[in-house]
Amino acid sequence: MQGVHSYRYNVDGIGVSDTPNSPGGLSKRRSVDNIFPLLPSYFSRSSSRRSPSPFSRSASRRSPSPTPSSLYRSISRKSAELTGHPGASPASLSRNTSRRSTTPIMYSNSTGIPVKPPAVEKKLECTLEELCFGCTKKIKITRDAITSSGQLIQDEEVLSIKVKPGWKKGTKITFEGKGNEVPGTQPADIIFLIAEKRHHLFRRDGDDLELAVEIPLVKALTGCTISVPLLGGEKMDLSIDDEIIHPGYVKMIEGQGMPTKDPEGARGNLKLLFLVDFPTELTDEQRSNVLGILEDCC
Image 1 (cartoon, rainbow, N blue to C red):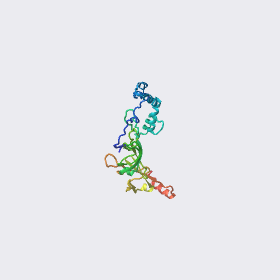
Image 2 (cartoon, rainbow, N blue to C red; image 1 turned 180 degrees about the horizontal axis):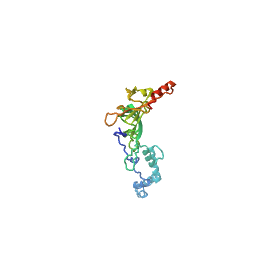
Image 3 (cartoon, rainbow, N blue to C red; image 1 turned 120 degrees about the horizontal axis):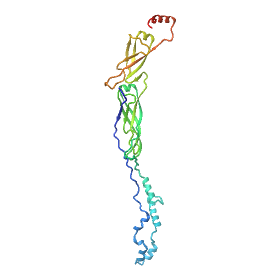
Image 4 (cartoon, rainbow, N blue to C red; image 1 turned 30 degrees about the vertical axis):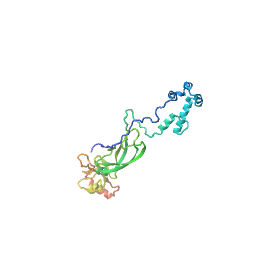
């Protein structure tokens, strides 16, 4: 199995609008100076002089024409009644109305298309057994999510990853749109990177497995039968009778390694790396016997 693979999980997401909200508040305000042309004609002085009614003079004294300052104070008083704050102006009413708006403000880039933040990478540790025989991993994630009303909440979700036999360290599994949500952007992706847990017996080398086997010197010279552990908990007997086991000796057991991609269902090999345990002490008689046996062999 060559190379590192990448797997992508497509997730249907709900798009977040990136169009800025229209400005809230009141409609266009008219200045005080623009109100006077709309006032009735009986407020003018000439209209008072032309009035034929005998009560016009007293009515004029009792109801003087409104001045700009008095009219502005009247508008301010009505604004205060609306807002509940004395002295509040129409401008402050507009600001208060805009401030109370609950519509979330959305941002976008210059093209109007929501940007997508960089993907978030997480490590997913697997044992050699899980990578050899396959398994299903459940991962609980917590992320920032935006509700339909624009509120930011913490959302929990459990993701399921089906680990396939033969996956290697560095294999990528991508979940689209399962990262944090930020107003005005698309949800980020989450990428899980396969990492191999260290095994107490085996070491992986591509599609092969390596196992160190230590035997005493006498068995290395005279032959032996040993019990070899296999990945998964099984054992097999291996006899070595016609060979001398020397330091660095390697014995290959076919089909007991990791699954390969091609052909499908095949497995690599198990390499036995032999370590010879030499004695630390010999008597004079033992030395003499060894010398007599090995003198003509070296």
